Amino acid sequence: MSLIQSINLNFLGASKLNQTYQLDIYRGDLEHAKAPGNKWHKLRHHLKAAEQQNAKYIGSLGGPYSNHLHALAASLADRDEQAILLVRGELQAGLTPTLQDAVADGAELWPSQRSDFRLGLEADVVKHISQLYPAIYWVPEGGGGVLGAEGCADWANTIGAISGQYSAWAIAAGTGTTAAGILSSEACPKLEVFSALKGMAQQRVEIISLAANIAKQEDDLQHISDRLGFHDDAHLGGYAKLPLELTMFLKAFFEANPYVELDPVYTSKVFFSLWHKMKNGAWPHAKTLMIHTGGMQGWRGYASHQTPF
Image 1 (cartoon, one colour):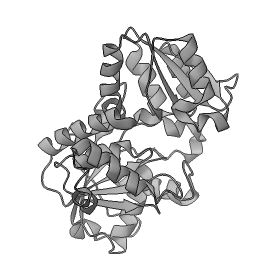
Image 2 (cartoon, rainbow, N blue to C red; image 1 turned 135 degrees about the vertical axis):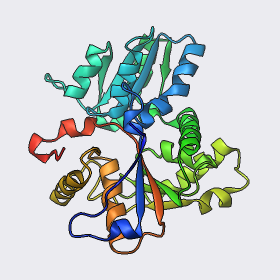
Image 3 (cartoon, rainbow, N blue to C red; image 1 turned 90 degrees about the vertical axis):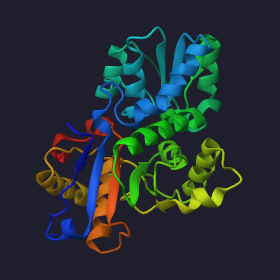
Image 4 (spheres, helix red, strand yellow; image 1 turned 30 degrees about the vertical axis):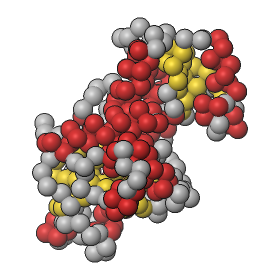
């Protein structure tokens, strides 16, 4: 199956969008069985760094349905290092399916109070775990940081080598690491970023700064900035919110594109926003490549009747 597929835009009464716009999707979700989409690319350089430091444990942070934690545990299942996963909130007696998978892959789970969790790698519980396991390598939440972004820059180069000419690429942003890495690559013509978070207008500046760092272009921020389009209105109420209008939209999308599944937190909101901009004639690009960042764990946190696929 090709990793680049065409999307049928003609649904929900829009019968002529395919004549006006071309939207293709890069199926990052099909790339890597254990760490699909951007997950593997953000982890790759971190795992190399951990190996170089002779780490026996690799720790990271995330929520109870974290794609990142799931991917990290799965990636370490056949390696010598053990995953130490710091989970936001109190661990419940009945673990989420995501965390059950992680434990089955050999991960050790630690709970974290939300106030402490917000401190990231500066959290008290992180310091405590580091004292118990001195030979631990910590990966920032979501696989972030410079190493995570560098892996996504490599990914962009790979995508660019196999894709045709597009006016722009489109992608979701959580931490912004993937967006920064892709933006740093000249393989990406222009990057339209849709933030999954509410009230994150400042994320644009953070993405530009990290991208310039990776590209070694700190003295030419304008070149980076000119290639970035940023949308902070695509969250549909906030992170992981799944309003009825989105589930109904996804059902119509899947009927028109039965070979593509989108996750509820990131890629679905990119497509929802992008499609409506196209429908309203407000999308400036005739030919767009949307990057599927993989990670379908989010659906495991919703009732089955909310899942359109």
